Every structure is written in C-alpha cells, then in structure tokens.
Length: 52
Image (tube, rainbow, N blue to C red; front, side, top):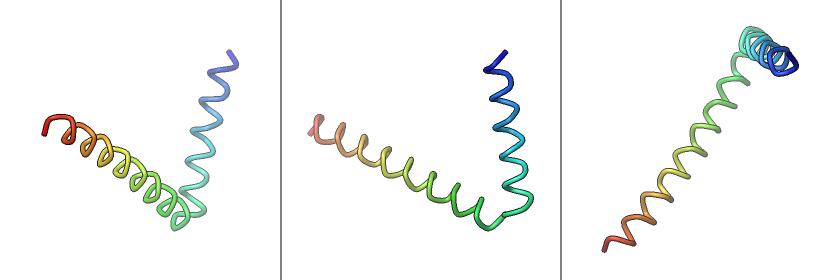
C-alpha cells in the first residue's frame, strides 16, 4: 500500500515538475543522461582493457 502511494506521488511530482518548470526538468534529465553515459563509457573502457 505504501509503495503504491509513493509511486503515484512520484508520478504526480514528475508531471507537476515538467508542467511548471520545463527548462529545469530538461536540465535534470540531461544531467542524468550524461551521468549514465559516463558510467557506460567507463564500463566500456574497463572491458576493452580486459580484452586487449
């Protein structure tokens, strides 16, 4: 029950954030995407170093 309430609360907050602060929301998602790309690049470099 608590998990369902927290999930719906997070979805409502996300919709509110995107609707009222679209530029800030875009910046947040852009920085999250950049962080994920950095992690993926690090894993790729690690596995490349293992193979060569």
